Image 1 (cartoon, one colour):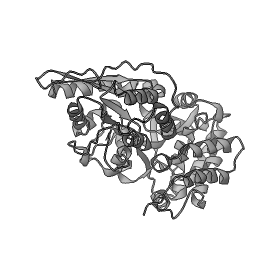
Image 2: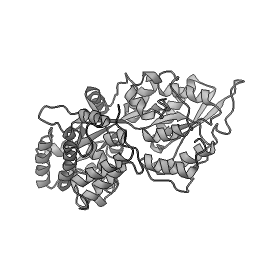
Image 3: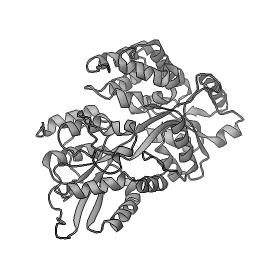
Image 4: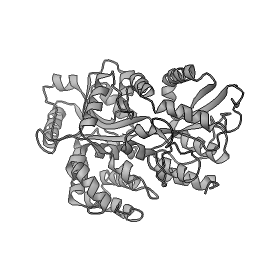
Length: 433
């Protein structure tokens, strides 16, 4: 298994992960990591750890994190090497199969990590100080099939409805709390020439992201999730079909020809005030504040089933860092993992990147991140398709997303979307006992 061919592993990644499939590109894979060239420290010499990531935009923040670590660990030097997200899977596959290039790698959550762990490319981290203090539900995003933990979760992503407070105030409309209020508010905004929701449909994953936010109270949130995992209900359940119907009902509130526009075009509508709402992960906060620091933002977690009802925050772990098994400096790399699992790192990560940390006890200084953290602690529900239906070839998540696209171009009905997703799940899903 460890020597699984590159082509097969690429196929598994393409099925399990969110991004584009494998190509022959190896651009940027120039790391000399301790998979090959690190300097041992048995005589007090400095060891260099090469760390791969798909987040070039976070490089400056990581330089600060690493400086704090190196100050306390002067014999360990960490070199952060980020790559374009769209190229990362291929680069990661190459370095793992060749056994050279990196000591520490950023891992896609859930099935992404499981695929690599099961192939024998990662080191278990259960014994690393601080890991066992992380919530088990978050560690589930970084487990192999053997139940061991292979990654230290970095941050939580929340699916939210961003809204422009100024647009709502200037058009004298109230922030919706329920689905019916959302429909009413959207009609009011539309009558004033405002696009209610800046949705893109060109990348199918954006559709399941939106579904995870607006659909949860339609299918019953965690109660439905628990029943689905036990096999007591499935994706053809009327409640789940109702959640898809919401997606169909939203279409008239999306931009014209939304199915053909890029997410950046949708973001531009929201950033310029031409659209009132935008649905995506909380990680978009950093993007919005970078491009328009004065944008008056707030978030809605979801729409309550009834006025004053619960509004669970859709929550998932968005990546972790793991140690490559071929690294010659596993102990030093695990020392860095210990740092990543510390409250010190969690606080720095939240403060520098405005993210919800997976580490308990971190108090964000950003008011909106603090609000999302508090809402998550109050009530949360998993991103159902990513967390529990990310298996299969293609994954059930991918099948669902493609079916939603099919619905919007009139090739599938709401019921057929549910049927396609369930047929995919039937091929691999085994109910929990």
